[in-house]
Length: 457
Image 1 (cartoon, rainbow, N blue to C red):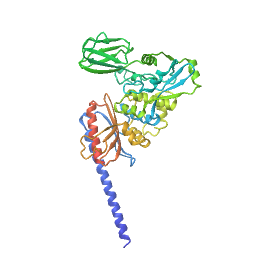
Image 2 (cartoon, rainbow, N blue to C red):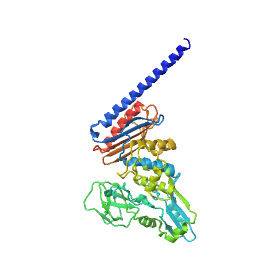
Image 3 (cartoon, rainbow, N blue to C red):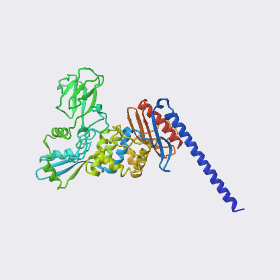
Image 4 (tube, one colour):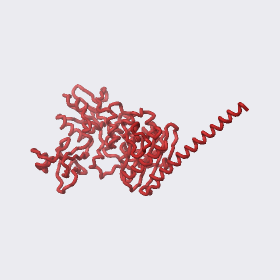
């Protein structure tokens, strides 16, 4: 009897503890279901939308809530999460700006797709500094470029928009012309349409056709002709304003012309015999910016150009050629072979509506990223935000969300990491497609739901 009673008490205690845990779990699950219905699934503005939700606890390796998490959605800029994973894994600590071979009579440069070359976001450009010091003829070869300027599924009518720069082997100035309007007395107007009180100029300076629009505009902006580098300037009412417009790269031709202007020296394309010769010569690498500094801009600004060029750079590093189709197939068959649903992945930025991923796929990539990279590095690259209405969450200790959004017409997605009330790191992915609600409305509803998830965990 004396030996039986403690065992019975221990058994009763275990049963009670297990029951309490089960009831607590059921209570949490019930609250999450209620919150998902309240803020997303039954919200009047989202009734016609397609919604996918996955909330994952990496400690238990279990989903704590899911709704259509296995369905495929257009992820928009959530695609950058997968690109960022590949870039963090395969790009070196500093970005390779180009390969250089110093021959007796010439110097040959092989570009690597570095999007930061002479980009106004950065002040230090080691490749440009090296080119300035060269006294021999400079040749450029792009036999490692194996794709096209615009991605599959990109909206063709956005060719003049700041977010749809052409991809290229040798980007320069972000493959954009940056236009500036300033109002104030100027003695030497730049263009015929300039007046004594209006000054418009570009960086870099160009000699391409430029004209002023006849109609007035409230906001300063610049438009490019569809098939040529010709620009129309629309004067705005602002005292200072900026407009960035992609230029047509023409392969590498535009980059060479702009680089010649900046260097003040002639640049040549390598011919077949020279390309054959350099195959037998060892090449050196010139590096540019810290990789994470570029990735941080890519994730914080949702920079499509940096994302697409990052994928090309990963392809160069891993496969010795820049080809997004090849690198995507390679990654899907190696690092990402365990994706829960087979995606359709087209570009690095998410500009394409052809791309399809599921919330469960996003969870897989985010979890894999956290397993392979220090969480502090992830937090330094992803956008962090604090809570707005969750009083029980101490935002002075941790960010509430470490995430990436993605939006385009009818689409809003948000995926990343969440710090819960109990300081747990949860991984989430919420994808909304086919909605008529505004991105700000969907974003607000998602955030309200996630704050309830954080409070319950």
